[in-house]
Image (cartoon, rainbow, N blue to C red; front, top):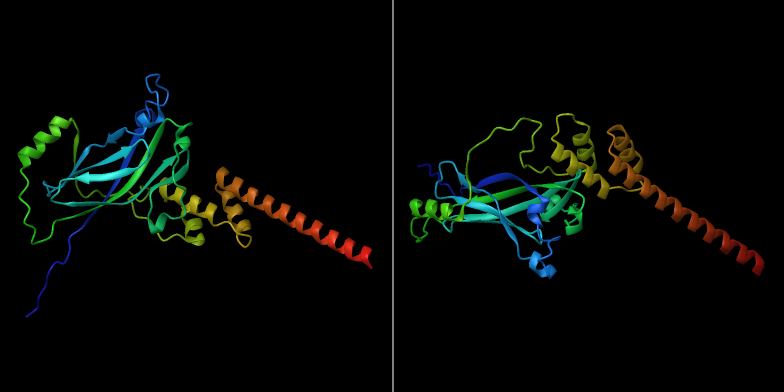
Length: 257
């Protein structure tokens, strides 16, 4: 007889969280703040998320003034932050690392100096409790009362179809060719284009700098152009230094003769 069993049930939730910088770090310019340590204690909570059809699965995101992101929720479920990155001023910076985003630099507080708003992109893995869990059933009335006391807004999540041009949270396996393809495709979401550009910045080498510079010019990517020119300038300086060193050695050898 055929036996079919579900070994695991998982939900990957892609979230976009827009925050004003003044709400993230409101105390930086406050006269009442005597020590930077006071700023680091602030934590911001997102709206509460409830997965449609799984009413006891309730969670939210938390952002600290140290720019750490956490996913927290009811104990009957497990909430794991798969990745988190921020997009600001056309650049992407890492908050929570993942294998596919290792090319991003971690965000720093000074990155927020010249912007008013930051968009955080997070992927949360939600898994149910073990089948043999002995934990008590959640009381939804108590949960809703708790949320009301905290004053948090609650958003019901359900399957949402994304237009092709929107970012659905899926991170591709980046290569130089893949990044160039994404940047050149008009239907690629703006978020993926930023990630693709960041990948190319970290992938500039002697063998591909010409191709990367070409796509940077074709797509009018000023930041990528700047990094290509800086790379070429360093190569020129190194070549000049090498040539000077070689000439000096030759002169020395000839003088010695």
